[in-house]
Amino acid sequence: MAALEHPAAEQTPSGASSLRPGPEGVEQNIFTTSLDAMVSWGRSNSLWPFPFGTACCAIEFMALAASRYDIARFGAEFVRFSPRHSDMMIVAGTITYKQAPILRRIWEQMIEPRYVISVGACACSGGFYDCYCTVPGIDEIIPVDVYIAGCPPRPEAYLEAIMQLQAKIMDESYVKARAQRAHERIHIG
Amino acid sequence: MKPSAATPYHQAAEPATAEARAAFEKAAFAALAERFGATLDPLDQWGLTAVVDRSRIREVLQFLRDDPSFRMDTLLDSCGVDYLEYPGHDLPRFAVVYILKSMVAVSHRLRLKVWVEEDDAVVPSVHDLYASANWQERETWDQYGIVFEGHPNLKRLLNHADFEGHPLRKDYPAQRRQWLLANDPMIDQLEARLRVLGYEILESPAPTSPSLEETSFGRKK
Ligand code: SF4
Image 1 (tube, protein in one colour):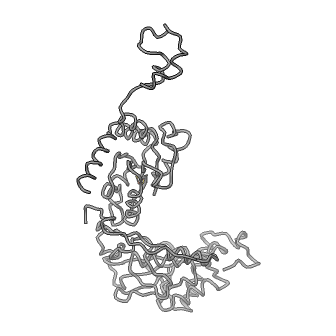
Image 2 (cartoon, rainbow over the protein chains, first blue to last red):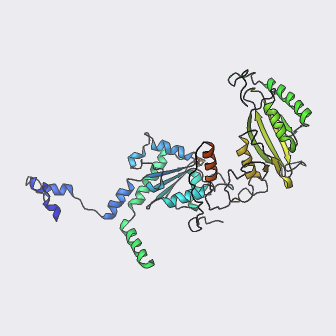
């Protein structure tokens, strides 16, 4: 392997790594993993949120993003207001029928892989607005990955949802999805 | 109305005590009854609601706004009421209510009501007397289906542009939902506003109508 000819290999005093095979400098700089684990690790720790805040639940998102709860600890602090830049949509608030096409369109504009967190009673089920104007749950129009209960949920619940989403992303297989896409392209096109 | 030099806004003429309010209501009703044939609304238990004829509402509002002894410079709200199935009600089905307040004479406040028949639900618009009436009348049209004659842009305000029916009418089932697909175009209003602010519109975006596949969502009809 080319990596074994790394200049660091020569500078290492011999004998120090007698318990392990190979030159020590290389060993400490190279680790092996699967591509899936690598990609999922990157994705789950750099979620860029798109805050789709329409009502009171969005106020809790502000608390979440500020220093006390600080989503930066989860790599998700880079709030983007363009769907092209973000991969985690946070739907926080009541979605009316007038808002529904807008929500759907913004979700369609987001790059894949995209994830949706549905925050609070309103976004999950319509909440107490059992009436002509409120969508009874955003999962009627877009797929949802994590639901958060509460009216409004506390910022800790948001953090729990982000951690659950991270766990879900770690479970995904980039390689399989890619193979599936290639497969579809060959058979359809 | 601009504050007069004699009483600027920050120097309220008299405090809004209960006595001052009662005295104002008495005087106001007497003047409205004499000039415009107003009657008292018996349904109002909390203050003064003067019922006037639909054809005179503009005159009444202009009088209340400009008369130096009233100075009702703020139209806080105007809204519709549906009296369908209201117990013991034999008057027309709808009413439009105007809620007025004076920012100069703080004890001055009153409501006006006009009755509107269901099969002739038309009321003259007052958007040129009170700018706030513009959106309030759009909302009343949207929710109750009452037409405001002379309104410059009587479009739905709260509900989706393609919504069918008027949801605050008592015979609209409260839980009847409508899936509506198209985005609501607002460019015309935006451009009108920009022109008012002195901008020149060089190019307008082409109107987009999303295809059905693009917006085909909603499991329930
Ligand atoms: S769930 Fe409660 S707090 Fe959240 S948007 Fe609805 S009403 Fe507001």
